[in-house]
Amino acid sequence: MTSNQEIADVLYQIADLMEMQEVAFKPQAYRRAAQTIESWSEEVEEVAKRGELEELPGIGKGIAEHINEIILNNGRSPYLEKLKKSLPIKADELFAVEGLGPKRAMMLYNKLKVTDLASLEKAARTGKIARLEHFGETTQEKILAGIEFARRSKGRMLLSQALPIAERIIATLKKAGPVSNIAYAGSLRRKSTTIGDIDILVTTKKPKELMAAFVDMKEAARTVVTGPTKSTIEIRNGPHADLRVLDPSQWGSALQYFTGSKNHNIALRRIAIAKGYKLSEYGLFKGSKNVASKTEEEIYRKLGMDYIEPELREDTGEIKAAQDRKLPKLIGRSDLRGDLHTHSTWSDGTASIIEMAQAAKSYGLDYIALTDHTEKLKIANGLTPQRFEKQAAELRGLSKKLGGFQILHGCELNIMEDGTPDVPEATLKRFDIVVASIHMGLTNDRARATKRLVNAISNPHIDVIGHPTGRLIGKRPGYEIDLDAVIDACKEHDKALEIDSQPERIDLDFGMVRECVKRGVRLSISSDSHTTDSFHFLELGVSNARRGWCEKKDVLNTTSAEKVKEWARKHE
DNA sequence: GCCGTTTTCGGCCCGACTGTTTTCAGTCG
Image 1 (tube, helix red, strand yellow):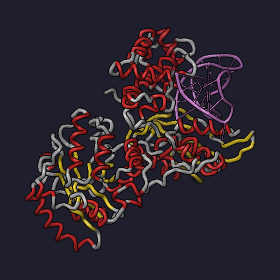
Image 2 (cartoon, rainbow, N blue to C red; image 1 turned 90 degrees about the vertical axis):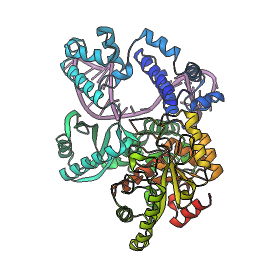
Image 3 (spheres, helix red, strand yellow; image 1 turned 120 degrees about the horizontal axis):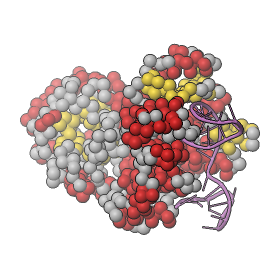
Image 4 (tube, rainbow, N blue to C red; image 1 turned 90 degrees about the horizontal axis):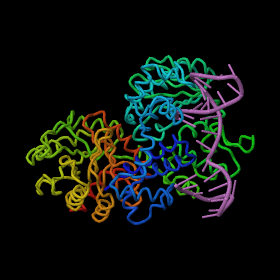
């Protein structure tokens, strides 16, 4: 099986090399196709088998042929290899250096035989770049700084890491001068799983003071660029951050523009052109007349569509849905009434049951399911059937102290190699709800992992599959699963799949969430809390669910504790 | 190479900032 990411990477490489040879328009076409493929929730290899590649957006006859060839050769592309022979450049490495694009990279290759990051660094350190025509000392210095940054920032930041940085910048700016509007935009506002850099927009009567405060922030390691309306700094040990100062009359168009995504904006601008408008960050224009720019809402309205929430702006069908007035009414944090996956000191949590319950209550929830680990997960101090009995006794004693807040008794059991639980049936029967997860054998192949999950879903005592793909963002990809087969099993047995909201998990990913929503599979958004201060992770899970077009009705824990128990009881 | 509210050819998003030019190309988002 050749993964979607592998196919997309090949197409990206083709685009890079073509761009360096100054091939017109094709690079964009290949990149657009690559983006479609890496965000496609179904395996593209399956689409290819059905002969339906050309139905995917941005993929026509030519690229479909390339994809078939890549699949046939197990991920290798003879076409790319031929390109590389004529131009042996690691373009993706070089383009990651700030200020280096196709033209300059080509010049460096022709004059200095620069092909990758190492040879680029050598050329810069020996002063050869500064002596080239059209380059200079300053450019050489910038390239060296860029190399360092590219090496350090390989892999993007988690959403949960970027959010507090953005909030700190906003707090600093608010102290520096009067601001009428301030917000973060970009992938942060769209709540992407990972974030490349941070975009802050502001309207103010004191632009100079705010720009100065921004580049002088104590978190800033250096200034990358600075101008009257735009500055970029590098956060110490962190990402780049941009500040843009705007006129209040252009707040909506600028927020729309800088929120992106790029593909969403390109699609919008095409629609604008078709309607005789021009859309930019300064507004929607008919000739030289500004017809909408104060709010995002009026821009979308003028373009003949409903307002599109930032989380949906990826050009994956949201524009058509907005035109047809068929956008989903997205779930919000306040729709969640409980949390169906939490831990206590009985297994590997850091707080007692009562502390966890009180924390959940003050976070605004009505109930939690206590789902400590089971016996086979030794490293997490998993509970034996006897200890679960004792835990049940403690729970009975607690119920009076919680003033209406409910604790469901559950567990997070281990799905063993053959798909069976590591808990005897008699013990399983006593739980209000059972979450089942794969913790061991994470390297199973696709067929095996799928079979384990399907077996678990078919078990009448199991209600929810926890972190269904086992991924850790930036650390391990997780096991591959046949989502279709898992969805079929969930539909057949009316079981739920979890969106685990731990920042490095966010598992299911939004692409798979969207597939579940489309097919009517119930979801559970849970914090997987091991500490009293983890319940706010639910906001990350909700954002991810929103990116997957999820509504309140799709999520199990938007109902009452009683309804959840009733649903679980039906399985046995 | 892809696509269609200009539909099978002829387009393909738009503007700011920088460095090295001495009027603009390259890069970025």
